[in-house]
Image (cartoon, rainbow, N blue to C red; front, side, top):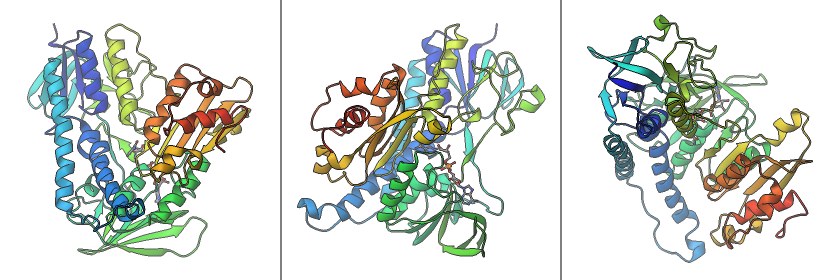
Length: 465
Ligand code: NAI
């Protein structure tokens, strides 16, 4: 008899959530993790630490820019960068420690080290071989760089998202390559800390693939907060001396190469699946052209007994997508019916204002030839947003089928957008119409009233605009 029903490789949000669900379903479960702490990229060097820094610097920004107007006078706080990093580390510790507690509570074994899979049903860690009926690969992703750009997080000059969370000091000039989620979140952090931040982006809009209205407003708001953008520019390479960097870029439309000086360069040009060292080649595990592990609708690879979830397979590289797959694959392994609705996975950018989206965009639907109606409501008409000085530039947009009124997608830019989007996610899960939201009583005064107003805008019209 194998020792385990399931061995999961990787303790990020995909792996650890899957392990807990497996244990809850009565499966004897172990997780292999090589980091010193559980939680993967998200808890150690991703979602959680960046949110700690975003929160602290947001408060600084509020104090510097919005306090006086509200009658809060006096000296703005000064930045103790080392203390801010300690705060961030404390937050990481609380969260990773929490997962360790949950493992003990659920009797999940943590096998410390890096795994290889010598054969189906076997996981080797160091000299020990562990046996399991099922293996779930949840090994995540790593930052991907560009040709001609060498990342060295220890040197702290050309860094990726991991290095940017622990810079020795706040740089005077920072160049961010890529106006995606990471570039804008971490670019915001340093702009608020006083760095001169320039974002160089290949596309003509920030956050490629996002609703066009949101992209435009989002960029405008960030520019107002001091971020500079060079759009439609392809970074060709970065030259470095010991303490300075030069970022070379070329306009996409053609023209001369230009150079930007920087004290720190943040490379935020995407992430790639991480399955190195697992021995998948020798096992004959099928991969996609993009280097992801190929899986079927039940997260099974082509090798019986081996499953894969999260960033290492197809789909958006988001912690919550990995979590959902982690729970679903546990259900499948336990003989139940695991399910993930890929049509309703929210995406959130945790800047201020936050940006949140779900479902399809207006443009994508129109390109498909779908007849849609769009209800949009500006936060300028929302009393609560005005009361806290967060009304400018934000809106809620709902896209519904022109005939059936069924909600097909939504986008929010504004305060607490990342929390508010879930009203729309639940509505979409239930196949709700915009009218269903419009007919639901919303407490006053809340930001969520803007969601109802956008739903009303899909029908006879909003009240407050
Ligand atoms: P991304 O794919 O979101 O954005 C990368 C950007 O870099 C793109 O806009 C691309 O056009 C640009 N780019 C690529 N090559 C370039 C070049 N040579 N010159 C100029 N621009 C160039 O990748 P990002 O921001 O690194 O994030 C990686 C992954 O992590 C994403 O899948 C993201 O969803 C996920 N993530 C999610 C977060 C969240 O949900 N809040 C937070 C952080 C990361």
